[in-house]
Image 1 (cartoon, rainbow, N blue to C red):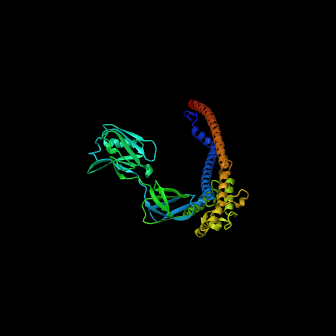
Image 2 (cartoon, one colour; image 1 turned 60 degrees about the horizontal axis):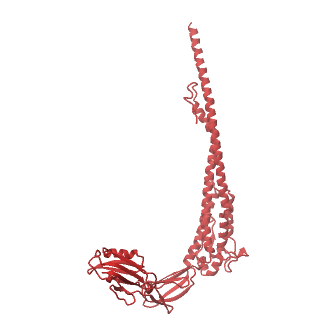
Image 3 (cartoon, rainbow, N blue to C red; image 1 turned 120 degrees about the vertical axis):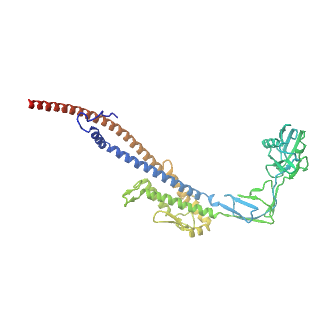
Length: 456
């Protein structure tokens, strides 16, 4: 902006101070726009927080609306020798598992040499899996040490891992199949010279190398039915049940598959927690603090108040989804005066014992009668609608963003007008300063002349 050079020298007026005070008055409308901008930004921020909280609540409701969630099971074993995991396709059951022998990976060892830096010979080592597949050739140079041969085998991708075992007898090349089971056993043959100690026939367990461990399949029984597997993990031995064997057993191990009530209860509690977080956020944003005489950022906002009323109404509504439970309060969800939702553990535990009806209360779905929809579906649908592209919160965010843009445009225009006003005032007061300076000079001249006359 333009400034006055040494303002007030001619007139003695504090021109800069005068203009500053006048501009402070002129800037009052701009300050009001800036205050409004801060308020709008706060509103956008709070609506964003509510959208995030509602999204979290919707996700929990969607989980409760899913029939797969209610099929969540857990497996228990009475021995560490047999581990169990389950998926949503598993059904409650109990069965016995007995492990006679574990699946093993073939391991062979070549004759000992002096050190890992010793060379063996030259030629080609061929590794062939007995279960089929292409053979893998490993070219061995005369300069390749035992360590170098190990590295070449590991780089070949033949399904075999080589290592070096060093003890009092020297260094031995050990080759082990990467997978257990007889189909993953391997034969080794050589061409060239000095490499005979690397040969091995898995069928006869003979060759230049010695067998450290033959390949073997798992041998076990499940409910007295014989089971064989190349792996120590049995996937879907029953629908949705995976068993992992880690040791042979002295007798049958009992496996129990049951509904995962702990996970069910945890998620149901998360439903109440997510609602409470959302409710408290809305209450804080819409309340008026009489003591501080300060309103919440969204007080009187129809979209937010409407959301609050709608959710509260849904929580107190009834449903025909279950024949045993009509309301959420029947299974332990209790509304508090502050708007929070708490869980009565005694009621909820009792409802979990009647799992099929509790499941219906949350996940039932009807294409013809909305009254038969479970609460999980109801809240998921409503929350998705509110958060959708044409939803109330999305529209509110868009409206506030547009309002913020208009405010910024008004501020920009106001800044331009203020700049022009300051230029005008500076020009006017510069002219006034000059004229007053001229008049002061004339006044001094006349005063001096009168003084001279008086002396004469």
